Amino acid sequence: MSNIEESTSPVRPIRCPRCGYDQRGIVATWKDSCPLEGTCSECGLIINWSEVLQPEKYEPLWCVEFARGRARLPNAALRTYLRSFRPWRFWSQLKMASLIRWRRLTTYLLLLLLPLAAGYVLLQTTAAVCTRLEWEQVMADEQQSATRWVTIVQQKIDAGEPFYTTPADMQPLRQRMQAMQQLALNGATIRHSYAAAIFEAVFLPLRRTSKGVITNPAAVIPYSYTPPADLHQHLDSDRVESAKRWGAIVLWPLIMLPLCFVLLPISRRRAKVRWSHIWRVGAYGLFLPVTAGTIMILTFALEHVAKGVVELMAPLIDLLGWITLIGLVIWWAVAIGRYLRMPHSWAVSIILSAMSLLLLMAWAFLGGFLF
Image (cartoon, rainbow, N blue to C red):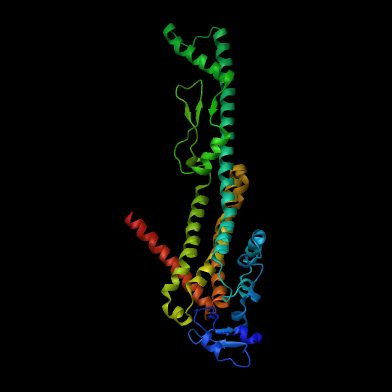
């Protein structure tokens, strides 16, 4: 059997890359030669037959889905991430005819979340360590103040200056003097290790109480250590609220934009795009919010260390938010045009983005109205 007959055998499932319609009936009509292109009778897609019959020859080896061997998977994930910043080239090389490898794609998403998780751990660790250092500085200042107070009081007592008019009033002074002397000699004690503080901050970030306490000889009741939920109280509230707002604005379209294809029944019915391709585009588009979120988290971590410097970076959050939102529109417009091969890709992307944002506004209004 010739190579043409082997590649065009009707036994092998040959489907349209976009709608999945079986093309073996058309292939069976080929006798002497294989045409370069054809048209799917179901969705109208112009098919490059070589991509459909031998898709392995067109698989981009830089893509994480098609890396040869598991050992090359981390390098392929990094290359896929870097190429995502050039969506025109990305979706020109990754084609619908290439089989979707969901395990590889899931692995890529997990690897993509690692920088975000590492940034979160760094933020919480930095907040816990800085809070611990602040407590130590406060206790050192209290010890120095107690030393000065004891010295001043002792000097006045030695000089015979009366503090109280009756002997009964001397008892509170003696007790206060003893407590302050103990504080001056030993200082306060934190019963909460660095490891415990970091563990609470990372794994119990919303906890309103801490197991740590601070014993002070001058206080009857031990102080409560700063709970994990209060580690970021000194951060600029406007920037924190801005980060939360942009997080919702960006993540909502990321999730809802693929689902909004349901609201375009005519366009989708004409193109007959399979949902698997839509989810593939959405999965690779996760790199945008992950990158912006990691930068925002590192900015807040830096604010714990250098508060004055970060105030100059206040516009960064709004800038990252706008770049990410516009980037998602561009990402989907290029993917719709070059990968899904649908007409009017920019209009479709803008309409889908607007629909997702309108749904977000409706959800926020109903949520505020009901609750």
